[in-house]
Structure formats: C-alpha cells, structure tokens
Length: 601
Image 1 (tube, rainbow, N blue to C red):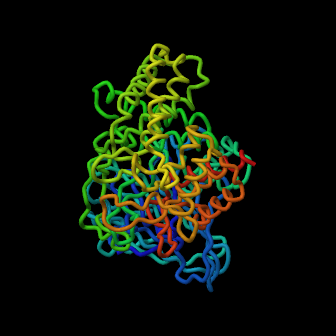
Image 2 (image 1 turned 90 degrees about the vertical axis):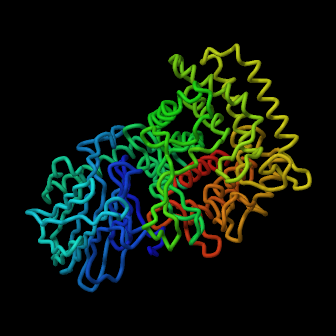
Image 3 (image 1 turned 30 degrees about the vertical axis):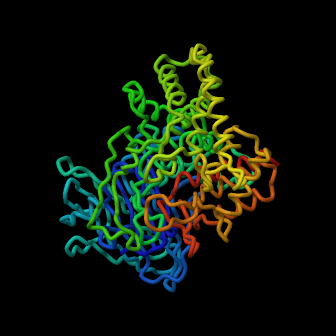
C-alpha cells in the first residue's frame, strides 16, 4: 500500500506523458509514450509497482522548486555530509522552442545530481515494473548503464556507474565531492525494435539545458496575464501545457488514475483523458495564461474527435482518448492495492458511455471564443457547429446524468439546461459566420424556452436558490456558473441568493466548497472541490464582493503544494489534498477566478 501524501509529488512533463517525483527523489509514477499508456513506475498506487530513486544516504533538509519559467524540477538536499542538487526533467525535442514545444519529445527521463558542498554518498535504486507492476524485467548491466527486458518494453538506463543487479532491482552508492555530478537517463522502446541508445553525461547535461531553454521560450511567449497572483497564473498555464498531448492538442484532466475522491473508498477514476465538459473554461484559461494557438489546437482536436457522431444521430460523446479514441472501456487492475488501500485501481473510464447534454453548450461556447472574430470558416466546421446547435435545440428538454457523472437514473439537471442555453446563445451570435441565419428563429425560440424553464423550475422559493435539478431542493456548485456564462448578471438578487446559499450550505469549516451533498449512487463521501471553491470566488467577484472573492481564492489556492500544484479535492476530515493530481480543472479554476477578481476591481 502506498501512503505518501499525494501533495508530496511534483510533475514532470514533455507534452506527451507525465512523471511524478517525490520530495525525497523517487519517481513513483511514469507513463510512456502517452499519458494513458501503461505505467513503468507506479509506486504511487502500490509499493511493488516500480520506482526510481536518487537521494543522499543521509538527509537533514529538503527544498525544491521549478526553475523559473519551466517544469524542470530542482531538489536540494542538505545533510551532515554536505549538499547535493537533483535536477529532473522529461526531455523536450532538440531545440524545440515556443509553440513547437513537445512536437518531437523523445520520451526520455533526465536526472542529474550535483554535489555543491562536502562529500556526499548518494544512493541509487532502479526498479522498473512495466504494465502497472505486472512485469518484473530481466536486467543486464552493460557499458554505460543497464538494459531491462520485460513484456512489450525494453528499457535503457544510462548511468556512468557500476550497478548491482539483484532480481529486478538495480542499485548503487556513489560518493560525490563538491563540483562532481552524475547524469542519468531512462528511455523506453519496444521489445521488437532496437534498444534505445545509451546517453553519456555530456549529452544529458546538454539535453537538460536545452529542455530548460524550451520551457522558458514558451513561458516568454505566454507572459500575457498581469494582475494579482501572477506567478500562480503563470505556473498554472505551464501545468496546462504539460498536460497537453502535443501531437493532437488534447488536454488531459489529470496525469494520474485512481487517486481517490474518498480515502479507502471506491471513487477512483482514470482521468488521463479529455472531457468536452472542460472545453469552454479551459479555453478561457488558455486565453489568459497561454494564447490562441493552444486554444485553436484544443478545439480542433475536439471537433475532429466528435465530428461524425452527430451525423450518425447519436449523442455526442462526453470524453475521448488523447489521440481521439472513443472506446475508453474501464477495467480494474486487481493486482494493485491502490493509494492508501483505495481500491479498485481502474484504467479506462466508463463515463464515456454517459449521456450529458451540457456538452453541446461547451462546444459552442468554445467555438464562439475562438471564431467570433473570424472572417470565414471552412464548410466542415460550419456544418459541424450547426449540427451541434441543432442537437442542443432538440435535446435540451431531455434528462441526463450531469457534468458530475452522477450514477443512477437520468434527471433534469439545471446545469445541463443552462449549457444548452449557452450553446444556442452562442450559435445565434455565430449564425452569420456559419451561414445559418435561416436557423436563428428556431434557435431563438428554443433558447427562450430554456430560459423560461430554468427561471420557473430551477429556482426554488423555499430554498431561496437555484437548485441542482428541476423541482428539487438540493444545492449544486455548478449553478455558480449562471453569471459566468451570462445567463443572469452577477448582481441579480436570485444569483446573489444562490451564491450565498452555496457559501453557507455547501461550504465546510475551512471555506472549501462541496460539489453537492446529495446521494449520487456511490458509497462513501467525497471531499471538497478546489474547482468549486474557485467558482465561488469567481461568482463573488461578478457579484461585486471583491473582499469575499479574494478570501475564497486565497483559501483554495492555499492548498497548492510546495511547487504550486493543485489536486482535485481536499479531504473534509483532515484537510489533506486528494484526488487525481495535478488536476487541470483546479488550475483552470485558479486562472479564471484570478482574472475575474482582477477585472472586477
């Protein structure tokens, strides 16, 4: 069972895959060559599922940071023997700069440890376990490192030291003196192909330096946000870029699978996929912390992935694989115990089979953000967006399972109706560009019907707030989006009352917001959601409550770890970050709330 806190991990990314590194220098999560590939290291989910550790034999103090403008991690170990600095990165392609970052990432994990003071024994331990720990590879020391064969993979560990091999673990202890450094690299290949090359220390130093330059060139192009919490917004932009699969433009919801929403429970999902639900808010965040090229690439991916489904007359799928895959069937990995015995561990996500009519609104809102100032659109995109609007107009009266993917029977969720209203509102605005002026009367009638239904059936006079579903009394944080999408102004009395209700009845003693408190078809309880707390800050800003908005923002952002990364949730009992990590939606919420608070002051 893995017990290390989720927040103890730092993210490495190359815009194709992700690694997580602990504060004591252990890579406990690595999937290659894609985010959703089987892991090579997964000690995050089970002590026996693989790791790669580099650390001093004796340590008294640890400090770490990302090098300015990068996701290259620097960990400094100070102990009785002296001080060493560990640099970790997933390598970018050679001389990749700016928007090209990640286009040709080679799939190499770089690690370099340097002694800056004293004489320090450094311990190395390398225990790869491909296929989520199922494979214990055969290891063969070779000149300049080690080769490991097992399952479908061959792994090359470049290491300029003699490694002892015992079973499927290799280790060494090397004493470094001030000024000496040790460079190592790991690359995976296929068992039927050539072994990945071994890298010499000089090459590793060059690749680290070039990777730093690549990240900084991207950051310099995207330093567009000026205002409060500028550093946090910039870092969140880099996290979103790291969670982007560069070949397609897809952005994964998180780097991990099965980190629980309830410790010891079964709310453990695979988030290494792309949700349409996140589209419009993601694009707003990219517009603030990145630029139009990332926005366009992300929307183009979603349009390609989903285009033919509406032609077939079926519901638009809510999520896709990073390559555009549609079948994301879920299965348990029964050999893994899970983080803190939170089982089952799952790969795949059966939410792809759910019905969520809000996706039509998210797509059209995203299209409006990108294309509202465009001069022309190609015929395929015009036809696709018209079909999306027609689906919203036709399907809005139907029940679904909501953006929260609640299990059980379909219901009339307010958020789903709201997003259909958004979709039609944006389609009407885009109609001249789409060549769809003949649809405007029908779309306008449908939009007004939705508005009337929400105001009549979504508002609960007894509760004094808009509620989760029509004709119900349960609150839901997603109703905070009503002023954010322009359905009602932030200072409308009903919006103010709803914001107050969420702040008092869905918020815990720490000031963090639950999604809802209703039964959702799953056992156990979940934590509070950082995204929803940022939504509260956003809504308060739109309501003119600047001081309260800042307080909510600071509360949510205070749960970032030492390198600024946000999890999905916070455990209500302990205050510990939980859920998949780092969570794109949490960082998206931070960016959008920071901008809203800035613009309201």
